[in-house]
Image (cartoon, rainbow, N blue to C red):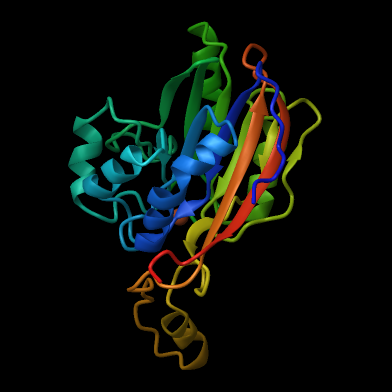
Length: 281
Ligand SMILES: [Fe+2]
């Protein structure tokens, strides 16, 4: 089934996927994203990939796999360095479209923004992390002000899309309003639970508190149900595990944005939430 999200040819359409979780999420991307890109006339695909490697961070191989399978820019968050190989790789591959949050401590390897060229002009993607429950981060409000000031001084006027990777809905909603009219979109990630509050704010910034995930449907935000239950029932907390075998249907949570390329103003934000069949059957 294809939902009818008609798009005027003059508008830039961006698809952003929720957090790609483990092998089930990566497999759904490789099986379905090329078709969805085409069906929905998408100019740019962004995805949060910080749990793509077995639920714990990203590896070089999983990043390359996702970029090969139809994603243009990968964002992340608090788990980007779970796999140690990413520490060096992020520092030595500045040309790659793989981001970590801007408000990590000074000196952290990697970059937080990337300019992607589409047929309708350049779009800049910025990654920020929340501070509620992430106290080691600098203030996303202050660092984004500095970043936007520097950008303005450099004369860069094209659209900006922010992945705001944060836990608290309150912080995500407030950052949206704080940046209303200054960026094209503030899209939340991290909880892997989609929220029903996608909307256009007063001055043309699109916002959603959390996009959700691309991962196994029969799970607790991607985690194996039994291992996620254990700490609540027994207080004998073991390590929660991602589902080992990607069997069963996959939740595909995403956002479609339509943006005026020159003004950077968003004209539409729609959720595209699908349940994809188990292709392993
Ligand atoms: Fe996270």
